[in-house]
Image (cartoon, rainbow, N blue to C red; front, side):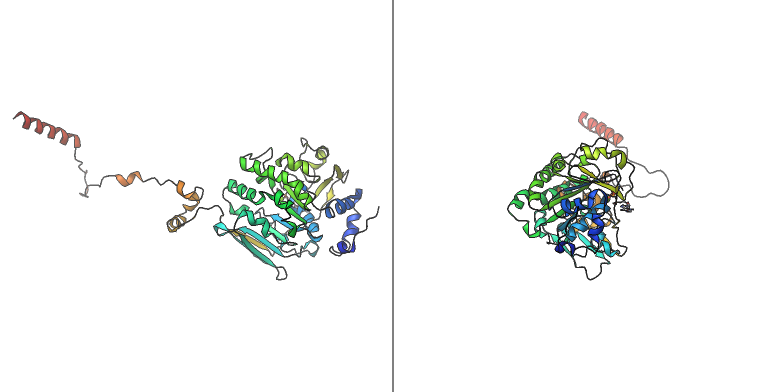
Length: 385
Ligand SMILES: Nc1ncnc2c1ncn2[C@@H]1O[C@H](COP(=O)(O)OP(=O)(O)OP(=O)(O)O)[C@@H](O)[C@H]1O
Ligand SMILES: [Mg+2]
């Protein structure tokens, strides 16, 4: 089988990339080229144990999607080593070489600072006034990093913010509002933190968000926007999401109870896989069939450092609260809306004044009962007379 790669596509990749890709066993390379790179809007889910190599595989695939011209929208996990590679890579083979836009919430003085990026890469940080505007601020053709997680102390507030970003996204996609930045890939790593599957938190916010994401998937696919979820188990994602996904990357993990038959079949092998190993399951077929794919290691550049500070869900602070900040009370206060902070007076504030210091020796207290008895007696004597 031969595949002609359009010169306009071939030019965007390093020399020899497609020769290597098509040399992969079981025609996996052809599947990646046709079903992933050329087919826009195909949703992907990357699953596996903690430290199983999910994020590294995602980075490699996002690099290829970016090269072919998809706008990348990466939701920052806030973890060291997960996003530095989008700015730079010591190995030129894994360099994105695209301008990077970082979107952060406007409230709470959220700061995102990145150092060590060579000048040839343009980096801009844009504070976004409200979550509804997040998708409007996406820069076409660039790497867009939406950084939220480290700015929310309260996970519920984070989920609310997430939900507001995607509210009405299906309708907006139908109206063509996202055409300026599609084709695109929206990547949500550690998706179990915001979506409500069968495991973890099934609170109202995550259920509503996950249903919304699931329902909009079909619309997004036809608008050439793919969702790329990275999570520990397939069941972390809601049923609509699971049913709308046909491309899976399977990492080390136990899938003996997985509802997807093809992934379940891999379970025995996958429990023994190394982090660099994994399988693709594309439209119900697994690749490779009898042994895992050896994925390249994109890694993280030594020179790039990212720091995030601020809290988008902190209450409004006035001068009084700044005093609290000094004595460390701020953390406790920040978990309550301002009006709910109950200030209890100290019981020691109402104690009677101590008698003057009479020097060493026992302090004489006035016997209140004796005084009362005496005054009663004298009042009775007065009345008798
Ligand atoms: N292709 C690879 N080649 C060599 N080592 C790898 C490869 N992929 C992953 N690793 C090793 O495994 C470690 C974990 O990888 P990664 O961060 O991708 O896992 P993860 O599943 O995303 O973990 P977590 O659940 O903690 O986010 C890496 O730091 C690296 O040491
Ligand atoms: Mg990870």
